[in-house]
Image (cartoon, rainbow, N blue to C red):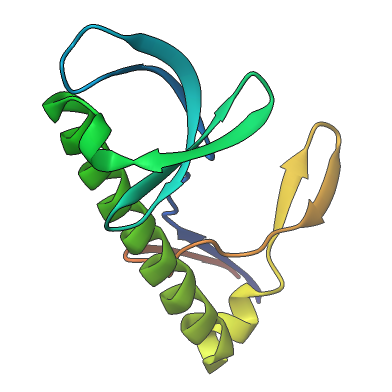
Length: 127
């Protein structure tokens, strides 16, 4: 008897940095920079190859809203990584740890970035 089992997990991918135009609170000045990180009071950007840190209060309302959304995405990404690490330690996660992905014409090891939320199980048998 021949059996084939195929298991697939759904995963999400996120971008690392995002270039954008930043606007001052009074709307008079703008500059281009890549967003790196932020905390409650400051934002860190990469401008002309230099890391620049400044107070969020100096930015426009739209930029503040964008920073809040990016901060929420970062928190979710950290939670997803933690959930993936916990899932990888389970028996089922250890079995999935043997998964490989196709890179061009060769296979390489695949590591979970998030814990799978859905699974598709395919089973076929022939006699």
